[in-house]
Length: 459
Image (cartoon, rainbow, N blue to C red):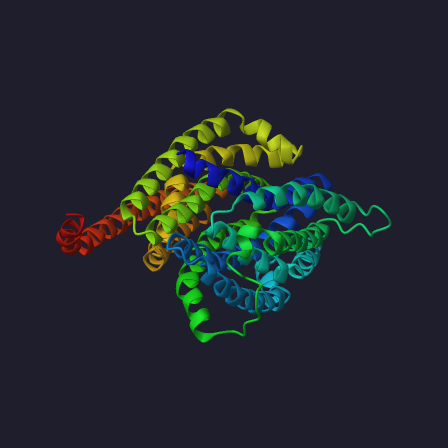
């Protein structure tokens, strides 16, 4: 538990810093106006699933590097980093172009003209930071793979206040800048992404431990074999994370027709849930490192024990966060907004958000451990079934139609999330049990023929 906590705690702070950019956006936009809050909510719902998918693609660097580190081959990880940087630049440019041409989708959503203008400004601002955040994800994953998670924590101490100050200047138009309202949140996030990258690049370039992997020792052109290795593992990880985040984005888009009050309350609940989710997510990332190192060192029993310990830790913590959410729901919402109508919606939805935290913890830690085993393809299909076959159709029926029960509005979608996350967590836990057990059995089978030889040598 101590070893996992030492890895996970800096990651928690790093994840909170990423979530904090969304929290600061939501809080400051909510205090500016309802339209600003709705515009920032729709804008973030449109782009952040793609950012998370980009992060998932670069997460392939962590288990690959962890296996190399555990096997004593850290010097080979530099080439992995260089290939991942090429991939990050290519994908981020595609995403930047695509996110700036969302006009047909905004027309289909039928949002009001003021909110649409805010959304477009938000997307334009945040998209210029995509190349920076993509390269940051590569360097962060490399540092994680070799067991260095503290740099993320230190960088977070700088970037979070920077994001707050940038929001304050750009939203309200201080220091001679024009008041951009909700669109200012996007521009502030884009600037913060560049700061993330520059600080992480500086650490990677000067850290003796990071330099052992020789990530910047030479120049490498894109390699078909190197990119193939990253895509083989990164695509299913990216797809899994994209499905998880896009389900929330789709829910926000469906709820858009119910007006800014419902969207605002839903966004507050979603943002708070993201803050809480950073804990099991970080434990899962720590399990990727622990399992990867153990497997690289040919210790599958140690990998399995670490995975089981991490899952139990996350489940215990989720019971505490669940209780906290239920007891302090109104105080939590007060941090985001003082609007009584939005507050009423958010407090109501936090009840449902609290209930799914237990299943969420199982899902996140099982996923992280499976990444350490380089097992991502089956996870992708299991997550797809849980979210897109169960959660979204059920949520639409409960929220927007009277076919099962009288239309429940936002409540119906959050109720379906509880069902979907429970199914996903159960499936992934069973998959982890299967994969980890197979690794132990395979290792025992490989070692068995060597035992007589080793005993003769000892004699």
